[in-house]
Length: 356
Image 1 (cartoon, helix red, strand yellow):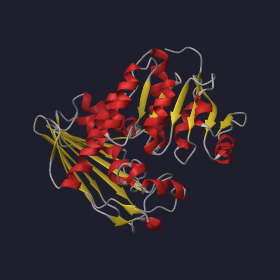
Image 2 (cartoon, one colour; image 1 turned 90 degrees about the horizontal axis):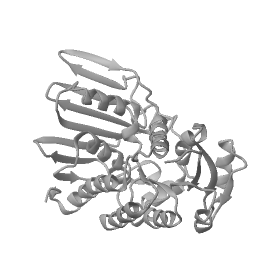
Image 3 (cartoon, helix red, strand yellow; image 1 turned 120 degrees about the horizontal axis):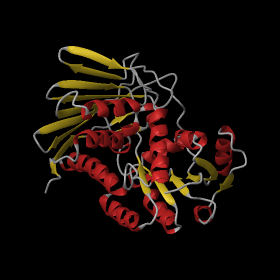
Image 4 (cartoon, one colour; image 1 turned 135 degrees about the vertical axis):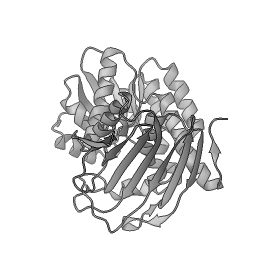
């Protein structure tokens, strides 16, 4: 539990740091005091863009973590660095927010969970999609019984093109092409974490996962793990799937990644549709409920940045009140297990049982 404003440091000032910074910059209970990046010019450029020119900048992680004026560190590094840097941050006595996916494999995840549970400060695995306002509205409707008991979840991940998308540095795409650094493909494993988190959030842990993961050329010659289909079964005769399709000739609306995300949750008494995520296909309503022969639409904030704002705000509030982060390290391991099962299924050509 904290009373004074959290003193926050970001490790990694790449493309995604702009979204992580928003709530820390505007929340009176937190302030960014330091940045760490091997490219100090980039870190200083970010600080200037965020209006915090007096922030400390360091290119050495060990020296950065030794700073006594840091309470919380936000770790925004390539996946293969998550475990070693998170362990260092905990050893330095810091509150930790670690970008997803938490680790490359379950052996690493077990180390991190054990360290987090022994740590006397909170540790969060950062997942923003479950804090996306349309997702939060859908969850509230389901909790109120709007569709009865959820029976299935269908998730569509649809990269395309967009004239308004932000620029992604070549280096950010490059390390995601290296399995040893990324842990899996950019769409099924990396971005797929959001989708597996959504399925987990609405339906719980799966009992079986079966996947076909394709391969195609994306923009700029990068490889996409598409077209892909991941099917999953949950206890209680409930099912779901994740479909990933790259549409290179389709234009969509976005200020961030050129990708649309759509979710359909069917229950015993109705259906909820969630439209949009990273981007949008036209002016579709963020949330639509079908119940008793009628459609009801809900207008909630639908910019992807709001998912980062809400996720960070939740953690700051949890730290103030003594509440639990979302995701905890143990919960992050559950989502990682889900994602790894899809990769294993495609690799081995068989269904992966997770209930044994």
